[in-house]
Image (tube, rainbow, N blue to C red; front, side):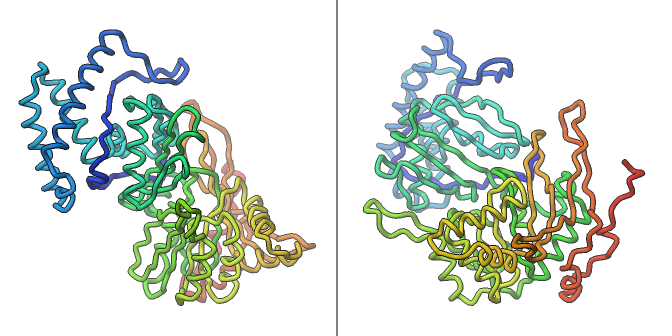
Length: 472
């Protein structure tokens, strides 16, 4: 049960000279075998080779006849029409005998190669897919509703996959080669891309795409899917309106960015928001938003702009709130100082398995930043800066859930004190493999409740009342 709708926007032509060709071969996914690309029969292999040669020939003829660089200046619909018309002419001129099914397939795959991202296009058009994981050119996995399955597409070879990767990263002004064998990028719809190539990737290029919904999920969507309750939703909304500093914690794919987007949607329209990200993923809907993105070093190792540089700079941009997509390093110090010096209501995410681990991660990042600071002073900085920690988990049934909502209350005996306000009580698993449980209030009335009332977002005391045990 995914948090993400994963609808796709149309994407542009990209790099016109990318000439890689696809070889899409349907094959069933078998759950009782070792996951790998199914081998083709001798007859199918001969057919695939023949179709590949035809496709390669038509592709080269198309590149010779059309000025694709000029077409890039046209509107996308006009560009697509011109290319489709040229393909139709070339298909009729082709001497190799082709049946209707083969012509239809070649037309589709050539359009994918020139107008999009080759074999990835059918997956990008599927709204049920949240992750695309290319382990090598002939092994591609996708995640649907939180579960992995083998996809029925393949690239022709590693070179073809590398050309698609180059097409993606060049569209955002980045590069990937042996000198820079790892890169983060994004697609036009906001989907996050990570690629790594040889010599670091031993079996050929590896590509990972984290899909994002064009239509941003709402708080009501999360409630409907059981990711949290309506009562918790009311508290989250009040927390955002009351300008409390929020830390969202969770593992990979737990839905941290999704929840961050939703919480930021409750920020009043008259407040100025500055976002800082490694790869732009946030989809804030307010008008008064300034988006900043880090820059990797160039080939000479110069020109890098880090998240810490951007956090420091945004303090000079008169922000009301600072939203850091994810804290990973030294920028945590500047972010905490900003939260504690007049930029209330700031938000960020961190990778951690529990809310307590999230605080330890912040302490570790401070320690590794190169700044000498006493342990007690470090914990005092964290406790006085963060008000709320929201812990998310992606469970084995594929559902992303909020498993704890905690308030930081200060320091006690040299440790950061924290109290749970809501928790998810896991009861077990049903016959369909779905996790059963319920959200419960711990009975603790948070200290921030009075602040929420002052900001016009009062919370009824009944929200924090624990459930009767007779209901168990």
